Length: 420
Ligand SMILES: [Zn+2]
Image 1 (cartoon, rainbow, N blue to C red):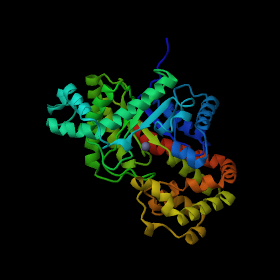
Image 2: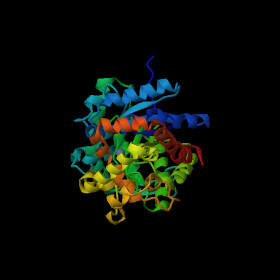
Image 3: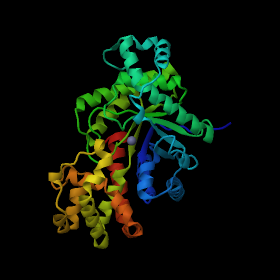
Image 4: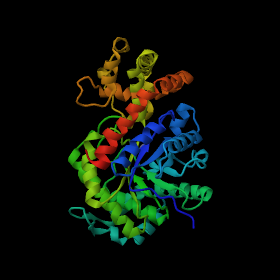
């Protein structure tokens, strides 16, 4: 009897730009296991990252397998083809067992009116007053409102279905985890919209185990959440309730859970998230990526010598090319150029000053979130250094590994999954 690949309750996406930190990342999951909580590591890497670095998806699989073997990790782990579409999925098929199907670009694309009518007729429960266990108050919507929402998302869901079936055809049913992501878009989805999307996904027969909506507020890369905390908490909790409802109502996989993208460094929402998860006995997938690359840079600066020189050089290059680096990330960064130190000033910094400005420690007066965000997207500069960068991080391996593990465990896994 074939065993279906199934994602456990708690999981953490551990993106690793240069595929050198898998062991240090896995150590964070070992610390969690030692504390009695199993957190499944998922090595995620998008096609965009592979293009910038010049790497192949197979390298992420190889690094993950090696770390698991060397540290004798006995639990599950996965390799995620992050943000793929029909054009980019092919080279991920073999090495990956987790696919994040990104259809954000199709939100709002016109759908056939017959598809909308069929959807509405199939789902009378969505029209009128809908009470969801665990959500205060009820959703009230007219047929026209539900049609309006369906019109926004039906084309995107159909595309997700096409991508899902392509992967299923290649890999075989049950041999991979499917996620649908709609986070890289401009407007957040309300809990009612999420429910309608889930109904459409179930109609299309996509057995998703995770879904990544866009939440309210800003999820800027590598820095804390910005937005209305009360509203986020209410919406997140309602989203968790909506998922539980959709599993029962539409027969979606029982382990369906939310996936939070750009999820690293969102210190102020981990506690409300954990409370909502506990209230419903729900799980979550927290996707992180660039936070590990920044720890690589911190370790490099902390090691001193040539590594520290290279970190300053990376900043100065990133500063010179800041506009072109920011371009593709405009919806997920917010850099105030006035707060960026001049490269000449950084040149004169001590290693300690550089680390203080970069490390995400809000209690440190020298911490600079603008400096941090620019370096977050500055991995392209390190990629261009090629072998020189890889040699330097290999020399600073121990200092880097300590920072990578500590960041992932103390600042992410502990507050979200274990409770500080
Ligand atoms: Zn994402």
